[in-house]
Amino acid sequence: MPLGRRVSKDVAEPYEADQRLAAEYEDRLAAAGDAERELRDAQAAGVPGPELRERTAAFDKAMTAALAAAEASERVAMGPKVYATPAQDARTRRAAEIAYRKAKARPAVHPWTDEVDRLRTAREAHRLSFKTVPSELG
Image (cartoon, rainbow, N blue to C red; front, side, top):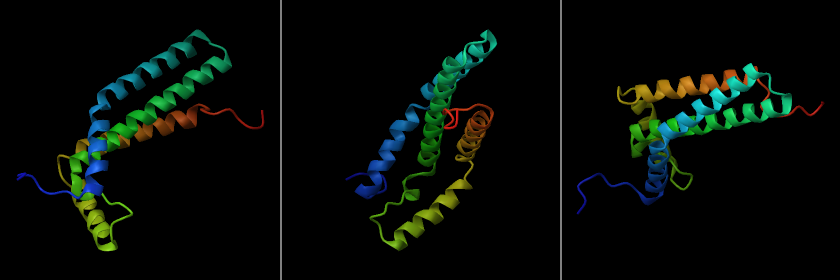
């Protein structure tokens, strides 16, 4: 007999997937740092446009991967109660939404919320500063 709380099977799968993704957070953040360093070095060296665009897109992908891992870490810190699936009834989904808001107020979740905000802001600042996709007009 397990001593922990029971979690439905439809919630256990995404929770375990988030745990695996959260374990990769440090590696993904390091990869984003490496990609940014390569981009900055290329800018300083005056690398031609197409190669610079590749490095810009690589940095954007690395930031997106790090952000996904940070979001997964935040959800794991909140616990399995915050997960809702389309297969659940409306009452269960509403309970998950309420649990999500309550969990956001816990001190253990605050560092992850701050990290998600920091990474999202950095990614959006990068996207506004550099073209990550080629323009359609030229």
